[in-house]
Length: 188
Image (cartoon, rainbow, N blue to C red; front, side, top):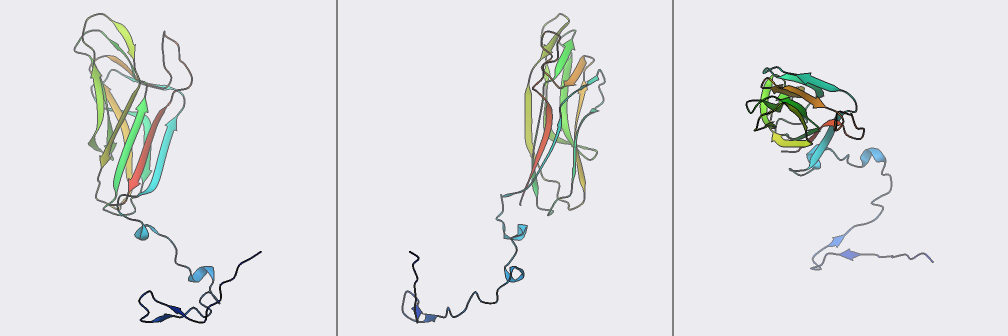
């Protein structure tokens, strides 16, 4: 059984006035209902999510200059006050000969290296391969409404360094891992 509430007058809690309800919804269309936009969302809220995943392959370098990994996202910020939470993961793979060998990766905003990055250096002698999983994250505040391209780049200190998809354990590529770049735009 449906219930109905019928009132002639609805008063405020203090009794100081009445609230008119006559036909408040009649004639309303979807065009008269306000649209939710980013201006209605509070600061600190996620307003966009971007992702680029590579499921196969490997990029290799022995260069001390930064080389593209193939992970990139081009986006246009909603506002100049937007902040971007950036995270990337991979399974780097490196053959080091001595303790001066290293590998590192960083996120670039267009041609500028951000502070979002990491790396490794293996101590000890011997030439052998090392593989590990890594996830790097951080926040960038570009202060622009122009299009931006974020790229992950890496370099090496004379080691044979792979920004790799797959585990590469025991010399074999293992499926199930990938390299991925994820960016969340946060309202400033």
